[in-house]
Length: 465
Ligand code: HEM
Image (cartoon, rainbow, N blue to C red; front, side):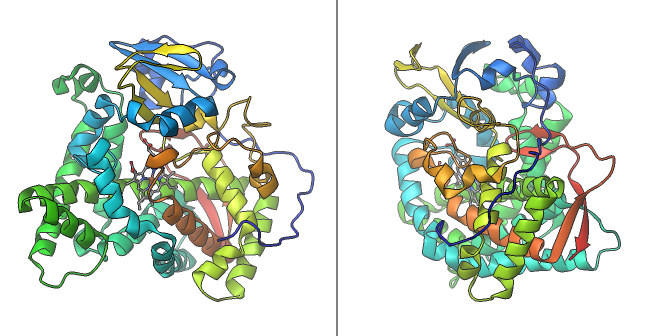
């Protein structure tokens, strides 16, 4: 895909659309309110105006020292320049371990490097190009469903989730039958909600403190998903001629280095990780893009026209992608305003300094794309929807670490190119066939667990063009 495709689109001056976001208090709230109150239900609540003006804030959360940073140079220092000094935090590993064990997302050092080396070949540009026909085919199935639906009001959040779930299942797991069901998707959501909930028990190492319905549903979700995937892996291990996909590659690579049970467990940890990390994030990107376009008619018209022309011209999916420069800007702007991954955390393995402040071994570093992407020192009119922020010329002026929807540095999202192509192909197919309009009276509220999603879904009126 190229940024340089000639396009003669020229933005007309227009009133910017300022999409939904929580109110910002004048001052920092006391930390205890994070665990009760509105903050406990929605981690996007409670961030004061100052958080979007200052680049650094230290806070003590019970026994943990947190450094919240939003200075791109400091982010680069943590995520790239001093990777070895800043591994994933113990607390994050404890939160993720019940579902994801020792996977690519949760390990550090040599264990992480080995896994990354093993999996990187599945996500090269050539491999992603090979997945593109599947992206297009699943997008079409969803659109066909809408075309024959009884109602023109469609919850595009649920539909995006189903679409990306089917895509990840088809591309990485060769459409494993045990997973192609609504139930699996709902269980995955329950796991994510439970994983992202602020929990005293994780902080204090006392899981009994964390008994509540969200955690119970998460545990049921884990039993279901882990059970299905464990069965699937056992069948694959016994299959003399398994499909040559991501899962087989991971099973074979772990089997070459570990005894069968350990290999099966590592394969399972990664299967859960890729199923979770690889579908909810993109689904939320699609949902927020449709929301923004439904409120900005002009942008939707441009994106729709471009998408129709791109699909009408035909050719391979890569060719279609190269004809979507405006939609690419819309997509990138969407991931700025609503970065699907809520936070990126690290733990100092030794003393250091950040933004002129001392960091001690064991301290937590927390980077919130939500804040960095709406920071007033980094963006003009940061809370407005403005795809022109990602015009190639505007992009060239950004600091590399001021836009981090996929993280950055060596641990940047392994699926970034996959998600980018998937997001654009699916969106463009939908925009070529439908117009999206707001449902009167529906209030949009962004909320978060480990992803940023709209509370209660995203109903939109979906009309055939
Ligand atoms: C719009 C979609 C996506 C977003 C916004 C996103 C975001 C992120 C972020 C922020 C990280 C870095 C976390 C950190 O450094 O702590 C990450 C890592 C990761 N992502 Fe994604 N992701 C997306 C799609 C995907 C897809 C499609 C896959 C798989 C097919 C995937 C799999 C992973 C994995 C396995 C990691 C861990 C990489 C490592 O630590 O080496 N993600 N993602």
